[in-house]
Image (cartoon, rainbow, N blue to C red; front, side):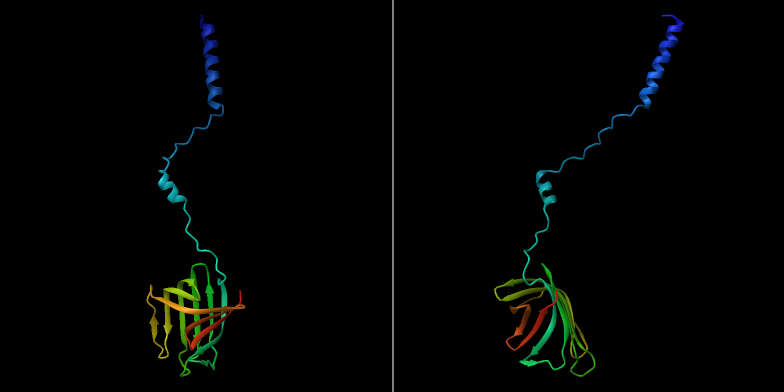
Length: 169
């Protein structure tokens, strides 16, 4: 090969390298993360178990409060919100002495069994008739008899005392 042919060959090779360097390159595959074990994969895919919807779910407004068979003269105000897992209650009643109102607010887990509602306190407090804040103990359970009729939910404390709520949403 002559010097001239080496120069031509070298120029051609350099041009080929230049074109190859500017040409779009194949994307390099990303390194794959190790696949989780089947048990771990099944655990990751599990969604939280949701209880089925209940016809009790909704927003209720307090319409009536009866204590020891006597309907309240000065009406209380309150709301009860029931979701799939939680029950939110807030009630305020006029104070007997006219000063500090009685207040109760709580968040509870709940479930219905027959004509009763079982609740477990998550967070709650009440302000008693002496103006003292009483904390409810998280984890305490209560069982109350309930009655449902045409948009009304009645929760009994005992046979002579109850709260009657009307569904508003």
